[in-house]
Structures are given as C-alpha cells and as structure tokens.
Image (cartoon, rainbow, N blue to C red):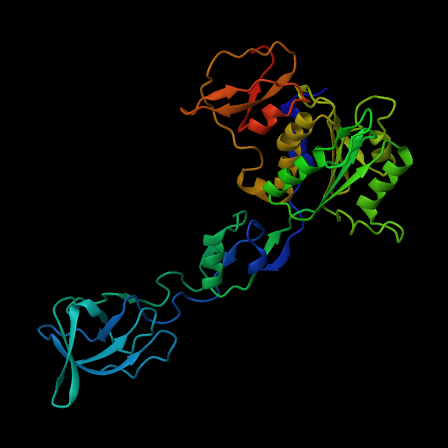
Length: 399
C-alpha cells in the first residue's frame, strides 16, 4: 500500500491537461482557458455617452444651448458639434465630434425660443469629460484580458464577448464511462432475488461527475464474468461493434474509465486482468486509507482509469479524493493550483481518535457554529452518513 499523499502525487504526475480545442463562447461555461486572450479591439470602440442626457461643448458661463438633434444607442453619431449647441444622446450612444461632456437629463429643461428647441442646465454643464467614455477606456486594443488557466464563468465570457471574441481555446471536458460490476446487483425499482442488492454506485458516481462539470457520461452494469467485463472495457476504449449498439462510443483519447467493484482479491474479482489485457499500465494499487483501500489507478496512453471499491462509501470517497482530482487536472484546473478538494482547518465538536494505521476519511457535517461533527455509521456499506455528509474529515493514523 502507498500513502494517500503519495497516491495524489502520482495522480498529479501522470495526468496532464487535455489537448486544447477551439469552441464558441456559448459552449464555454465551466471550461478552463488554454491560452491567454487579447482584445482585438478597443472597448468602447468610439467615444460614448454613459448616461441619457445631452452632449455639449463646455463653455464657461453658458447654461443654455440650442438643441439640434439626437442619437440613440446603435445609431450613427451626429455631425461635429458647434459651440452653443447640444445634441440629445442616450446611454451607449456615440458622441458627436467636438463634444467634451454629457449633462444628465435630470439636470436639463427643454424649452422653445424663436421657433427653435433649447435646453437649459442647472448643473454639470461646466465639467469637462463628465459622463464621457473615451475610446479604449475599458480595454485597449491588444490588451491582455484573460490569463491561461482562468475558469470561464459569466464575467469572463461577458468580457470576451464585449471584445468581439466569438470563440476561445479551452481544455476539453473529458468523456467518462462507468462500469459497475457485480452479479449481486439489481437495478432500483426491480424486485430483489435472494442474495441481490440494489446497484447504487452508478447513480452516485453519475451525480458526482455532474457536480464536477462532466456532462458526457454513460453507465453500464456488467456481470462478474471475465469475457463480458473484457468486452465492456474494450467498448469503453475502442467503441461498440454493430451488435453492441446500446452505447454511443468511447471515452476518447483523453477520457476516463471508472470501474466500480471487482478490484479486490476475490475469486470473482476480474477487473485487474481485464485492464491489464486491455493495455492499461498500473500506476498504483491499494492506498493506506479507510474507506477505499483497494483502489487502482492506471493509464492507457492518455486515457485515465480508476477502479474503485464496490462499497458505496468507498467508491464515493475514492472518487472525490482521486478521480475528481484527475478529472480537474485534465480539464486544466491544476494550472492555477486548484486541482484537489478544497481544504480548511475547522474545529471539531469533540475529540476523535483514529486507532487504525491507515488514514481515515470520515463523513461529517457542520454544526450551526461551523464546527465539524463526525457522523454515526462510518462503515463503507452504511449510506445514511454518506447522505448527510457535507465534508470529509481527514484523520491521519494515530491521531
């Protein structure tokens, strides 16, 4: 067995960011930027009003101006502005040439004089640059706007779109195939036969993957049969044949195969042989922790393979700590140092001992004061604690 810290170090060593792909902005939420972006234009690209109001040429001592036209947002700018004249503008509208201030409409009163329209201001009309957005005042042409490794959320995508970028290079989100093995497993909703239990790992891992941002996932249940397991592994790597059309395709060249169950040392545990025969090279097997000791991690070129223990708590804990880390590394999160689970030091509600020689990952909740409360029922087959858990409590050996 190896220590959890060594196992995580090996995951970080073997899993690199995926091959960047160019995608349109609409497909980018949640992706990690693979290359820095620069703005191809200045923002704003023209002198612009930041208020609904009146564009003027500032003249000290003058508060009344002849109103000669207007420009809404999206329209062409008016003609060059002459002295003693005002031009009605709206937020985002281009300013006429020579305008050097905008007076808000709240400070203005329009009136007629000698058949012409005039406007009188009660303030702000002697302040140069008031409510004027100069060219490039938000972003200069050629200015770097987003760094490599940035997670593209609403704000980042809004910035990219405002600079006229329609697409960006990102790290792809991996495709994942889940194989849940076990003759004792029955689908929820079906009657149980003697010796059977309901299969829950596929549902749990699917939910955990969705929470990690993985959208392309397929789940397949496989019996404890060496040939059928080998065929399922081959489908994940190489795609289905014509007789096996229920599954759409492979995990791709940089995806992940997740296996649940069958990785221990029992007579019906065939996962290790199936993976070895498929060309998967083992990185580690068995980690000094509980739950989740019989954990396998391997690589097939750039394809990631995790064989998780079959007990539900073991499967989810090992997914969260190791497989989720690998997926986030492949998605590019590690570039900015956020590859693993978020960690914090919090106060315990009471003393907790780990008499085991292995690291313990206990399911725990937070009380009303932000303290960590370990939950009852820490055995790997007990699901109530798993359902109530908000955090994992990491207890080193002998603590």
